[in-house]
Structures are given as structure tokens and as C-alpha cells.
Length: 199
Image (cartoon, rainbow, N blue to C red; front, side):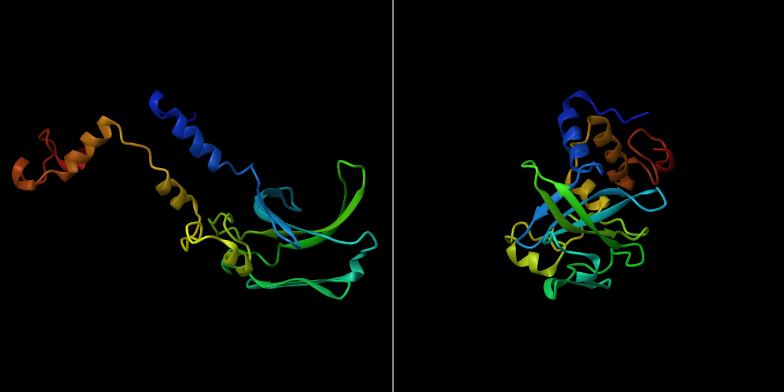
């Protein structure tokens, strides 16, 4: 059974669901690469949160031309002897190095041309509740405006706290129970005379 908000809060609820929908992929484009965050299926068939890092390459690129070194703090990706990415991650706590891997991928664009790229699947650790939405690498932080640069982690908890809906009259009344002065209603009693334990 889904949560049904009151009629006057339906638009806010839909906006919240839209913002936190794990099936939608947030995509960010940069000069040498593009990355997106969302849900992907791992090798065992389970869906997991991951970052898909895509790096366009030449048509003649083979796996032997690609060298990758991945740690929880840093990614160095070299293609044909040139460093494409050599940067620290903006946060070192989210990445599951053991599960992450890269592969060469060939796609056909709208014009019918075949484009080759490196697709690096960076899986989140199972104990991580973070959403990768602001920056992936430290270099990206320099491009953010001060208003966009939040040092707080983007987690489910912070998203819920950032999008509070107004309390209904009943919720405000319940809060009034606990805000009551003990001397006003008797020690340990709410406004209606009940024990605070039951209100």
C-alpha cells in the first residue's frame, strides 16, 4: 500500500518522489568524460546503485590500449599512453573497488556512426546510503558555484530533511502535547490529560 498524501500536498509529494526516483539517471558531461548515477544490474543479477563513467575513445581502441588503476580515493585511466582521467574522488567512502570494472562499448549514434567508448561501472558499497549527485571528482568542485557546493553528503536522510512538507493541523496538535509545560498540565501529562507515554 502506497503512502497517500493529503490533496493539498500531492504536488510536493510528486516532486519529492521524482527527485528521489532511483530509476532516473542523473547525467553530468565534462570535456573528457560523462558520468551518470542510478541503478544498474550487477553480474549476479542484483540491482545496485552505481556510477556509470563513459569515456569516448578512438575506433581502433582495444583492451590492451587501456590501463586503469582504481582505488577508493583515486582513478587513473590511460588510453593509448595518454592520461584521460587522473583525479581524486570527491568522497572516498562510497566506492566498492572490488565490484567495479570497465568494459569497451560500441554504440551507434543518431547519424548511424559507430562510436567506441570505455564504460566504467563504479558500484557503491552496500553499507553506503549516499547519492552521487554533485561531483564525482575533485576537479569538478572547482566548476561549481558556491551556491551549488554543499559540503553535506547527499543521502536519503538529507533529502527528506531538505523537502519537508507542512505539518497538518493534527500533527501540530500532537507536537503541542510534547511541548506542554509539565507544570501546566501536571507532571508527565499532555494537554488532554493523558500520560505522555500514550500521546
